[in-house]
Amino acid sequence: MNFKKATLSQKIFLSMIGLISVSLVIVALINIQQIKQDTTEYNIDRLARKDRAVAKSIEASVDYNKDLSEAFSQLLKEVGYIHKLKINIYDLDGNFILSSDDSLFVEKSITAPLPNSIIEQCFNSQEKKIKYEKAGYFGTYRILYVPENTTILNSGEPIITNTPFCVLDVIYDKSTKTEILIKTNTQIKKFIKIYVFLLLFASLFAYILLKQVTAPLRSISKHLSYTNMKSIKPLIWPVQDEIGQLISSYNKLIQELDIRTQQLIKSEKEGAWKKMAKQIAHEVKNPLTPMRLSVQYLKKSFDDGKGAGLYSDEWEDKLKEFSKTMIQQIDTLNRIANAFSDFASLNTQNLESISILETVKDVIHIFKNNNVQLVAEINSTNSMNVYVDKTHLTRVLNNLIQNSLQSERSGVPIKVVVDVKIKNQNCVILVKDNGSGIPKNIRDKIFEPNFTTKNSGTGLGLAMVKRIIDDFGGSITYVTDLDGTVFEVSIPLEKKH
Image (cartoon, rainbow, N blue to C red; front, side, top):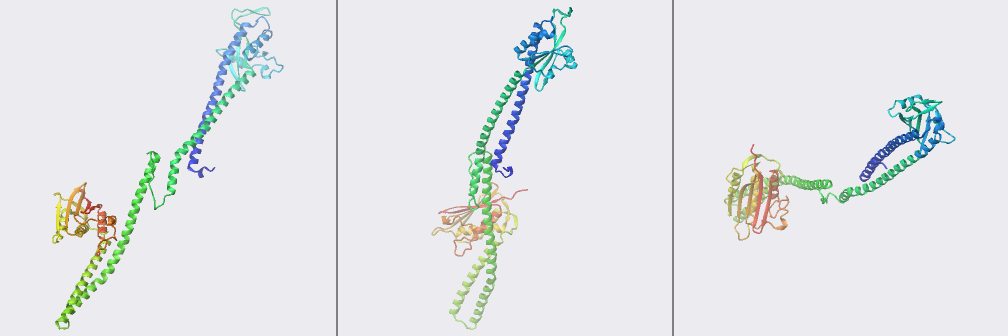
């Protein structure tokens, strides 16, 4: 398997198995080495205890009045058999004398004389012995002494007691060595079986754990496979763990994406409307001026002809009616063209610090001669300044008040109240009326550029208001019912430096 091309689950699983395997192998090697070391130390200590026992047995039982070979002959075999050891005897010059191994074949390495260096090391050591190891086998060279208060005759001459008389070589025999090796290997095999079982168990546990860990990822992948740009739904995860944090970030991202998408759609619509509005304004305004001049010229020509007695009173009435109608329609078209032109030029702003109170008073003053009851309630004595385009703000107020005046119910005099106040570092303007309210079926559409309920409307009024307030960094909302409507405009106050 190519690790680079493996799936995430496979990579995690292989990494976990690799890590577990390496860890177990390292621990197993350390334990095996420790077993061997402990076995070696134990056998060395065991041999040391046995070589002391052998030495004491020989020193206590040997017949010192006989020749060494004769004295050790039977005793050496008995002691070696009891302690399961192989025992060799050398004289003080290092020459081989006797072995407890009565086989016909004796290794040359045993019958060969001992080097003087070994005998010297034995004499120089504190315990009068040295340990050695050959091909994994352990042994001890020890100097044997004549026990105290023992008289030895050699050729009729007494030998001084407590003197060295031979070199004792004590090693494990083959059966003992084989037994130790078998026990060691058996113990190692047990450890290997345990570690193999642990490896299999750890692999199974890693597989189950991997399934649990990757289950959320598979769920997310399945969910995303059904997701498209038209239908992006948030994910639900019950636990706020690492996966939960990932899903929370994803949900925030798609929420932001949805907002951006809506803004983009709105911007594209407004851009298209601006382009169209600019074109319409241009196309409509071009013929309006010549039309107005033509009507005015026609009326002047008629007046001149009437003075000369060319036209009757009936023709005069018809011409006046025609001129009046034409002028009214031309003015209507001109207003529509201006509305489209204003909508197309919203991006151009002349920002300045203005007083909300003074601006509201100026706008209310425009409507003072209307046959309606208009009340301005300004619930603040503080100077409330905002940094906006005054012309655009005036246009917003004019549009909202005009819409309120046009919502009059039959038989109920219209009343419009403009309320200005400060709320959370924002200037809030409330335009309230007691009109007929906004029907439910159109409430979601009133801020769209192409929507209007008036026969002569352009559908740009509230759309333009919404765009202006958004450009100010503010917001506009409304509450409506059968007893009237309240529009709330919120604009950030000017920050004092």
